[in-house]
Image (cartoon, rainbow, N blue to C red; front, side):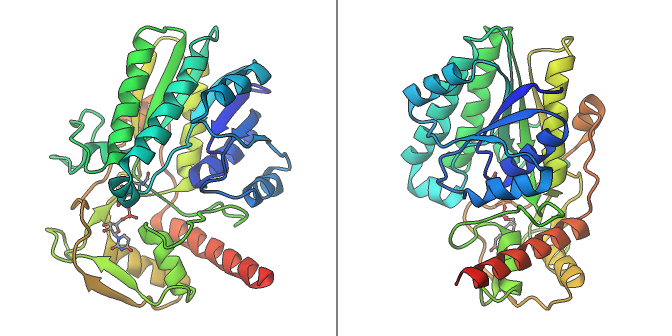
Length: 347
Ligand code: WQD
């Protein structure tokens, strides 16, 4: 894959930045598009610190169709695209659905309109297990029915997959894969990059690490009356580096395998489910801290349990998540300590 040029949209974001590191390690030439709405230019320095190579960077908004067209005129040799750029806060999407439909759908359409003009292109789409809602059967396979989304955010992922599938049907030269993430957590072991939630974290693990570091008073556990071993909800927490490596493998598969349909879908999880209380206990163990928390009511829209059946990705991509929950939480805690030290330096 030496020197193949790949576009990573949202490449300064949490999963995007870790994927850029993995791509550069595989010899890809990476160009990042990011509008910095939910990320920071410091991430570019973090990537460079890890790989010794600064990706090319274009600060542009994919909602601007002319800007997207100009980008592909400036970079005619892009052979692959990994598309992360999207708004992703479930709660915000309920309050401001049009922001989500414009940002997540229009940008995808404008990208695909440019890609189908090329002789060939590989496309990886950042999707989510949220498309399954509460699956009827666990673990969840890719054949599980896609249910009516619980939020506009989840709906944009469902619609996005359908847009790509319909486009691939009439463009054989476009090869695409949708990757349905379970719950990405953790950070690069170097702690040079990691999750940087802006404002109050919506997700469990950054809220845990900010509570442990003293930035939050206590964690609210959203409900302990679920039909699970300890009453708290179950999720499949996957290390962001396992997720990043899966993107590189999926992209390489699109470059090398021509014997398959030009559209496919894979679940990316560990195949293990953990309750919220199990995550808290594991975090306390690996961090050596006591986490203050209280049980409160359920959060609207939350499901009881989701964890992946990983056989399809294991067998067809020859990929399997290798990092444990302990390792994921350790890396998140190490990253949180670096972030707080930097904040203290700056203040
Ligand atoms: C995990 C568990 C909460 C915060 C969402 C999106 C998904 C993906 C990942 C983007 C749940 C509980 C959480 C807190 C808590 N996002 N929790 N207290 O909701 O499974 O998935 O984020 O791609 O698409 O749907 O992740 O981390 O918010 O919650 O008790 O302060 O932790 O109820 O059981 P979720 P999460």
